[in-house]
Length: 58
Image (cartoon, rainbow, N blue to C red; front, top):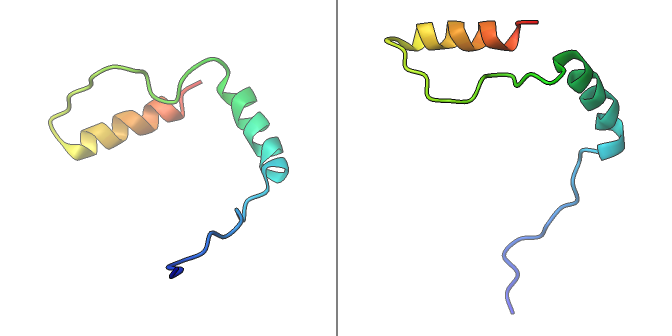
């Protein structure tokens, strides 16, 4: 049998990331980053500005 590649263990430790994820969940609350649905924009710049405003809202 020929071995093509080998799987490597994950580099990220889930326990180390847990604190950051908890902080993000606390700051975000129950709101999604971007509301679900179909959104139409005339330009990519307009879409980027809208998504940035949705992610930074309180």
